[in-house]
Length: 207
Image (cartoon, rainbow, N blue to C red; front, top):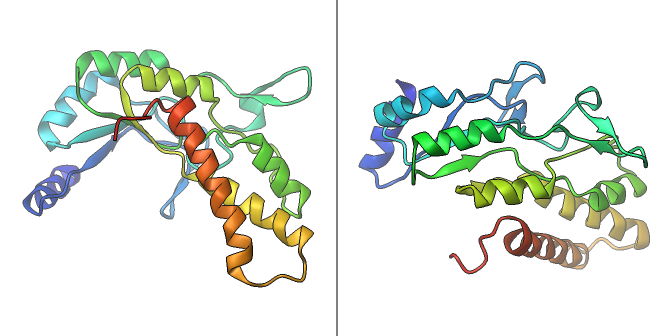
């Protein structure tokens, strides 16, 4: 009922609405869901939800989560190098949702891959992010090819900027001009986003 009210108000003002069905673990906009209390989207509910709310796109829950700690270590395995390997996403849920909503825009929230080079950079230069882990890029590529039209990667952008700024200040402790430290930080974000667009999200040339 609430989503429908939002949709009606938004549409009256020429605004599209992205609704969410299912819950993701993590924290976003001061709303917190503990790991273990998240819930996958039930594909049998998506048709009625979209029809009754009139939403323009639908974010579904298939195992992603908000933030830079998408899985607890206990949910993962470790490879020979001791690096955490996260569990696979529920592509069966995604595929069934696509089947029930052919051509309808599907979205994935909480889908940052948490690049380990930036996690290492943060930790090397004074940060403390043990066992930060995200969604492997190969799984995001698969999701994009399966008709997911929008994949949210905000944490990756934050990591690129924060890691680069930490490194800059460690190497230039006497600097204080934002124009100096924001320049490499912005470039790191640009490079990372370009990589995502071309090699992960499949959105190159689709603007």
